[in-house]
Length: 622
Image (tube, rainbow, N blue to C red; front, side, top):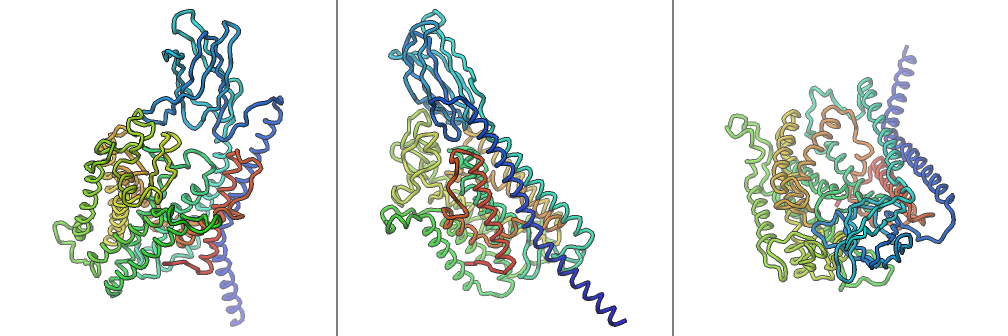
């Protein structure tokens, strides 16, 4: 009998160990399997595309790059004309002349001039006669990648009148469809993993669940346990950030917006700041409740901020192989520097105003329903004062050669009136305080708006609104603390905050991209940018909190693992960006498919590295 019992216990132990190993390996294996499916899809697409290209007749043509097409202007009009082009994405811009088209000799005997045009956004094409510069025709057209088009200009036998017709000679390639199908396969694989995890947990119990859910607080009381949804949110933001920094397949929507508006790349950094604020609230509260002296906490905060700042300066000035670092061109602002400043301000504020432990006697006071705000009114006053400072500097500071309150990109924007006013007060403060050679030299506005003035999106003035963004995340942390046993209250308050911030954004932007009082702008970190991204962050955190921590349908894998080692993953991906296996020489560097394969594989490797480090309990903490 004892032998049978021992054998049963041994089998149970083996089953438990096998179950735990399966739970740990399933997310990583699913991620790798999804990537294999993706690689098959994009490689299959590349083979198809190569076959199509090789079947064309051989002739001397312009070699097109990514997001380019050929346009032939066929002129039967008996007058020279100038072709001017303007991106529809360029707000209040002047059309830019790109070339001269000589006069045709008559009907049936035209002249033809070829041009290479961008396919990222719709273009406005304008033809003007020369030298009198009278407009013949104007049209908007969105060219397809690697397509071949002809613009026929025919004489209508009337003074200064012509008929302009666009003809598609060869259809463009679809550079999005198969990549989207491949990504969809990856997402479906991850989704099936989440569903399998939910079903298994419902039958056998989650390996992460230590006690029965009916008696367990949603917010862990012990400092050794964490809210998985926060690390999942942080990890998801970090993974997208790594993917975007590695190139994002060279798609325009994975690049930062040229000026006003949002792309996928513009979402992740403010979300990282937001979740950093949430984590500060939880960690400071736990430290104070454990009796750690506030003076000791302040010292640790200052030291950590200094370390983050120094590491940030090192990794954004990486060209050491080209010779010794030159102090004359050292870039000072950067992502980690912005995080260091934001962390310093928020953590110091929270250490100074947070209470030793949450007071349960507040349920009887009339202001109980807003006590998570009113208890920290000194911090709110400080943040409101900082935002007032940002508004005053942005709209009242005199900037030489620029109108007060200018928020535009300069260059050819605003009809070319303020070419050297990029960023208004924000750009002026950086150039005056840091110097032109110590800020970012190639801002996202230089391509569309043809700006020539350096501008840093992580500049001094924008750091104020970064603090505001982080403080809203800090408020989310206070909600989690004060309503730790009430998930319904937590989610309701997240929704309320999201709604309020959405209303503020709608008012500031007038529900438009360019015509609002304060447009959404990542380069400036405008107030509407902060409120809009905070609105999204509250909703996103609500969904993750419900799925990961309340219902436990999903463990957060694989994003949970990089979220637990965020500094290491961020610094590592920056330092090793140009090394194999994160980058290699491509067979066709003008293929979105190859770039997307390389960038997705590099990002997946960092997820795998973070998983291995998590299993070995290796974490880089500053």
